[in-house]
Amino acid sequence: MTIIENQAFARSQADNAAFRTQLLEHVPQLRAFARGLAGSRDRADDLVQDTVARALGAAHRYQPGTNMRAWLFTILRNCHFSERRKARHDGGSIDDLPERLQTTRGDQIVSLELKEVRALLQSLPVQYREALILVSAAGMSYDEAAAVCKCAVGTIKSRINRARIELTRLVDGPVAPSRRITRRAPHVELGPRASL
Image: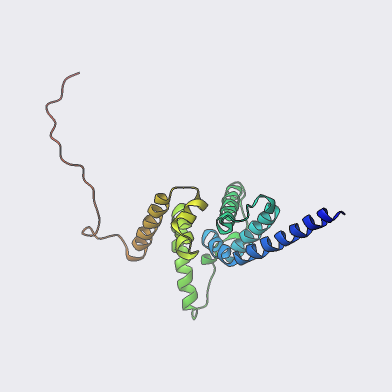
């Protein structure tokens, strides 16, 4: 190897180490997001593992200086949707049952409450759940969440608002008529209909 090749190799090794270090810093957030999407700890761990493997395989495509967290969350989200598409065609196994269907001992109140929250989150449409988890649990800004979901910032805000309304409805029951916002079209008087 020439001196130039040695320097390029050393620089490449340093870049790889920095990439891996930065990737590992995001694993806890990826795991939290995956848990919200997948609904079970085991499926979430598998999703994060797939995400990390794909990210390492695509490290050459990552642009240093860009938002790695958004890049990783996009990979995780795509892995999740790919897994869901495959699951539609596959019958699945008993191991794929959500944790909320498993039993718990009576003295684990906190665990039960967490399972209830997870069940409520799982009952939300996937777009609402994903937006809510990205902003509320993962701490992303609306702009970052919009980049991950590949939609407008206003769409993210709307999905989060709708998710919160739906969660409130699920917890408290239907919204009282006095609190419900209704939009009525203004009353317009039309003249007699012309015959055709």
